Length: 93
Image (cartoon, rainbow, N blue to C red):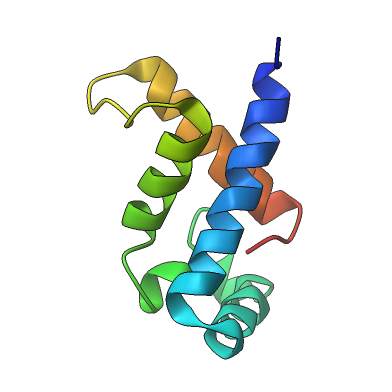
């Protein structure tokens, strides 16, 4: 059985992959550079300057979790946020 941490990592990695596909490699590298600046300190993310990153994360969530995130689900929100935090902390985005 997969642990929540592993699923979080996979979701974060899938989010980064999908984001790069969505906007292209040049813009993706720009996001990563901006996210390392004080202006984009967490919880702000430059990805929203280039696309609707929530739609990208929703796709990553569904692919990894096997279901769409439920709007009123605290556990889904926790997973979503953990994946996003992991992506930022590991420099994936």
